Length: 452
Ligand SMILES: O=P(O)(O)OC[C@H]1O[C@H](O)[C@H](O)[C@@H](O)[C@@H]1O
Image 1: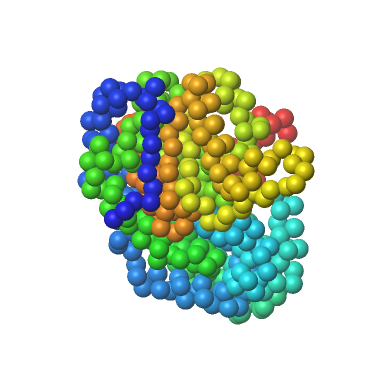
Image 2 (image 1 turned 60 degrees about the vertical axis):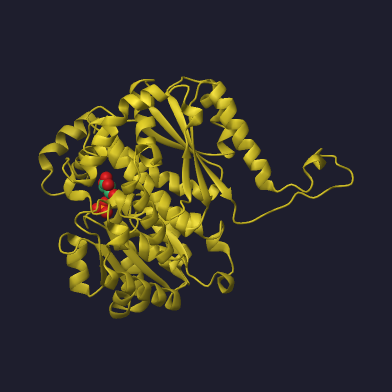
């Protein structure tokens, strides 16, 4: 199967030398073995490894049917979720669909507008989203693996009420789709009692690895993207990751190179850079994937991201000449979806006639290559990921390769890549400050620290 995604490590070699890669290779292969033989910590969260070839076909069909109903009866789909219950869907939809999706005439777009909430606690955001929904027919996909995440529950309460006011309880319950645990959690209890259609987040797939479950697939299908091709792309990635030896396996090499850059060169930050604005949320998804998987036990590479060329005019200076603690990974889209050719102007006052006849993407690629060389000259190693196109097959493959490399990289680093215990600390404090029953003994202490 031809691969749509390939990695180029040549511009990282000056810090991740062949000998360093050779030296870490056995640890990476051991980590791969631990992952695929499911013998490591977190091995009850490895359902994503075979997901692209082993998923619930009956549910997959129900997802398509639900998507068709939503397309038919709704001007808007409201997607309520946070973290792994949000980023994969948004990453995919923003990458694959029109750059100005919600603004495209609905007769041309033929699919509902899509808005996201439950991913913050801003009263302004919620009040203004209510304004947007005022005269629109809408449906809700509420997504939470635990079914108890505060942001998600707060948003759902607000928009469930709006929906029920608009349609009455019975019709509203037909416009709510809940994606959650098959039996546990407040959302599942609510869905059962109100009769919402439900989709399952499998027990053995953590939120940040769940984009290709119903978590991502229902909103993605509503947007009009092809979920069969997305799964196929991931299946192609899986085949590649599982079956190629180290020398022919970019996912394993990526795990190796980033660990070498971290351990040997002492670099603490990886900056994922794109040159296509529609990939912004792919970076957000990647940040959660690597951040929650590796940042623990006082270890890990801090994953951050830039949108280029935009951020070359803000963060470019720091990356080039500031504290040297980072390496970069660029996503290079080989074939842009659209072409815009520069025209010749008679007067040439802007001095751009030398570009007449060239595609804007040619300028973009020159900016990218110029940036790679400049940053390498500034001692910033660069990994380049070539992506055939921003389409379903390429994106599915990219997701899988990032997930697989993440599992291998986490085990190579020596952490459990599949838990996120640190996320609970702020939640406990927030519950105590909110006065949630059961957290009373912490409340006074925290309030004193806040001077209240
Ligand atoms: O899907 P949920 O249970 O609502 O969780 C949503 C997100 O919030 C948590 O705090 C975790 O850190 C994330 O890993 C998770 O993806």
